[in-house]
Length: 474
Picture 1 (spheres, rainbow, N blue to C red):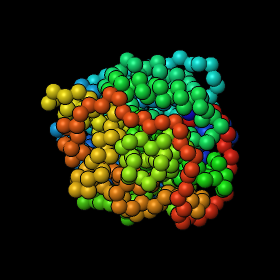
Picture 2: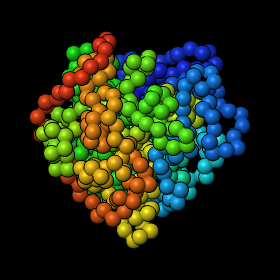
Picture 3: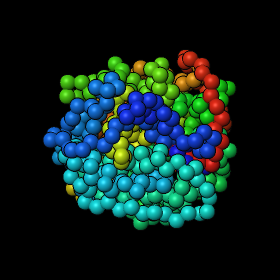
């Protein structure tokens, strides 16, 4: 249901440098529902490490792709230089894990000159007996992406990798139930998901997961989830007649849903002259990459109090915020024996968790506890136009209609393509320093009216049905 790299990891295509050929990055068709990270080209692992924190993109010369490492992302999004997440814990939830994650992280850290985390704990959760997709490679790349970039952007934070036995939705929830109670005040990253109307997104699964999020929120955790990589309609999985569909667990109001952007101009517009350039909605369909950010109204949850009067919908809408997600303009991920170029909304969830690790470090320094549930505070900042322009990059260009005429356009303020936008991290942290800790959160109600909507323009392409009870790495 939710633990397969089919709804939560949004897979695209991978290109191997060795053979200069594109190969499918997703798991075998018809086996999973979630999407793993979108994979672009890959390279044989480098034999040596570089001598600087910033390196030229490894994929430009051979493929003509733009890409970023931690240094460029830190400069583009204005990460503070006086915070590193010390004293905080980031919990990363993935399925299957990776047998090489420890050495991959060490190689990544060596290349980018990042200190090792103060601790890296891997917890292999017990299984509830369900069968998963077996998409070990895709989840291995997802695991490397999540661990490496959560750590890179908050190198002083402790890293906990919560590994579900497989990517069956119930097994992912089972893994969270086993681990999250032991990490109060943690920052939790979930780079996977499923469309809400999939047969495997069952009421029992949603109810169980919501209870887990309630428990984690009561402990002061801040929880993030990727919004999806198949546009507003998930047409690749649901067919060409699909209405707009939100992704779960991103649509749970106790989660902060992270959408995606790409450079404006595309592809290299995000990082310009050593700092922030410009962004637009992540939608690479017109550039030969069948991927775009998720974003749509939920049919599972009513609008929580903090969204009312903002979105124009009576139900929960996603995303809440966004982050770079382009494949061409993606991130370099070390997953032995290759280095991958990776995009997707999976890129944003662990880095938003890292941002809040920095925030909680700063709050601790002034004697305050973890911020906990974040959405009410984020929407409070977004509603105030003067504050919003200081803490968010408001995305006003593009839409998330992919393989369909249905989708949502970006506009001033909140929209269903990018939420409030991407972070100006230093300013966001300053704005949230004095916010009260929230260990409750308004989780809305599970009584969505089932009404989607939102027409837009896009080309129409054929899709295919994807049936499974597994999550897609996002």
